[in-house]
Length: 176
Image 1 (cartoon, helix red, strand yellow):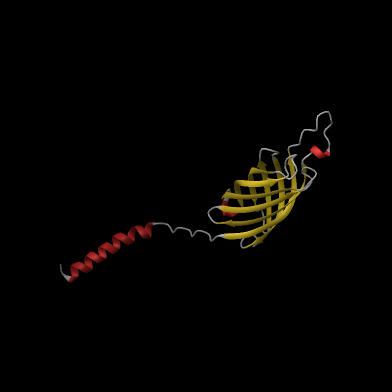
Image 2: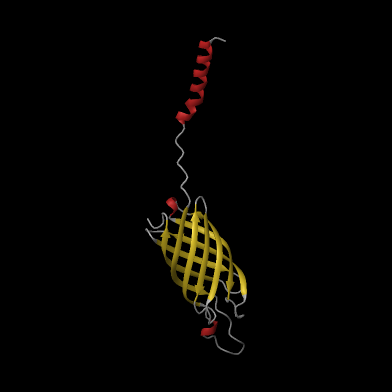
């Protein structure tokens, strides 16, 4: 094969390979991972407990009140969230929840996530400081810079609860 034939063959090969590349649309770059911290508070409402036999239901059987939260979050294609919550007056004590959740974007641009996971709860039963395992679920909304609105629930064998939180957001893109 002559030198001219090799150059012609190389030119045809380059044209064949380059033609589909030019016809393809550019693939948007995956956003880099995003890390942020959420700190805030809100309100929760849990399942009330039955009163002792022969007694009326009182404040000791009610499960609702103020809560505080601290969460560490990292997101890329999925969200990984470590959530620590404190619920005042759950069983006349402060209940604690430590949960690890994984989530998926629930809207464009990372403005909403739906997450679920597993958590360890302390003092959500009528047994003093007895730990239990629960399944937390959260819908996280980021309506504006630096603000997180969370709607959450926890399903567990002792006392399910739901709540809403408002949190300040400190981090890479959430606070921009």
